[in-house]
Image (cartoon, rainbow, N blue to C red):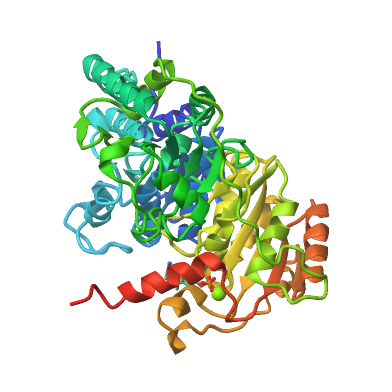
Length: 549
Ligand SMILES: Cc1ncc(C[n+]2csc(CCOP(=O)(O)OP(=O)(O)O)c2C)c(N)n1
Ligand SMILES: [Mg+2]
């Protein structure tokens, strides 16, 4: 017979059962007793320098392991984590936010307790808008069920959830025995059969189908199924930028990242000239679609996501993404002859000399040559992300970035989350000087935990992405001695690289140094941008002033 656990213990027990072994956050008095409970549980608590870093770390942890958690105090902590949680919502990353709150008894007579904003429910109301399920555990009769409800919703929709824990509810034990009744996602078998029959007919009739793989293939753990489907159909496969690395980029049928006119022309041609596009787990965001330069006609598209499954212009109810994917694998799909693959575009300037000034064009092929199978490449937002489109990721889960929500500050904290999630992964972080100034000092946690990411700071002296859209003094920032950060933190190796040779040597030394983090400041010309950013900047520059009147 299951033991009767207190509400706090049950919450930790359930998180652990669902694969959470680490919780990120900063304590505060409203959540201290819960922190003490975490200490006594099999879950490890990872303290970060700020709550937003904890949020980014939990997001990366969730992307690598399937579920992540942050634990924060009331309002000052909780509201600090709204931006990463909003990002996790937008990009479908399953993160659970646990926030302490004033005890129910303390709230009698409506006192002005510290950290309170408006009403006692204000923080929960805010989170209800940026999570898929939220609750405050105020009633012992429903609390256990509420914990299950939030965790199940997070797992099902791969979006964040919010659990608020008034501090005097932590040790409350409800006398009834509670059992978790896991909810199964419903599949309408008849609708699924009809949908698969139609999809099969459309795919078998097509002469040149292309698969477009998106982020949900990764979130639902369908990477192996994708490879099986690609091999079965012998169809070329492209990835969206959010889905980059869902399939090994060295797979013989891999085309590259499809991003409309912003991406490589050969990939654009291959996808847009296909007579049937099978889009799996793709969210058609503006960046995914190359700021709406993509041309994917609905009349030749089959699209399945966790939110909608549609063929041409009609959609099917109760055909969940995973069921669709698995059924398609079993369908009688015509195996075609090996398609002719477009040749990859030659990268200009790919054999630079050691004394040459480093540029975005020469940096990425060099990084490519240093990538190994045990690495996870993590990109922040900025030109580092546009340049990263041209990196060849060897295995599949190895590229993490906030490519849709595009919040700066993701990179360094995400390296903490990814490496805590899987110690055998070595993070290679690509981050701009501006984004590093936001959360780069989370390297403090890297030192505390003995992690060893290689952090490449692309110092183009300001907000280059913004400069491409509209320039002004607002894009200037203070120049930091980035390579001196190890001195501040008392650990780590720092390098400044100006030339191709400097970068090579710094990368070699950093990768050989497995005992601490390394930081390589790549000093770039302020006007130097990647080819993809140059193309994108042109388009965004036109849009920033609104549509033509
Ligand atoms: C949290 C956040 N604030 C502001 C922005 C707007 N923004 C997008 S790119 C960018 C500049 C990034 O600068 P840096 O990290 O140096 O990269 P660069 O563009 O120079 O390569 C800014 C401010 C953002 N995306 N996220
Ligand atoms: Mg910059």
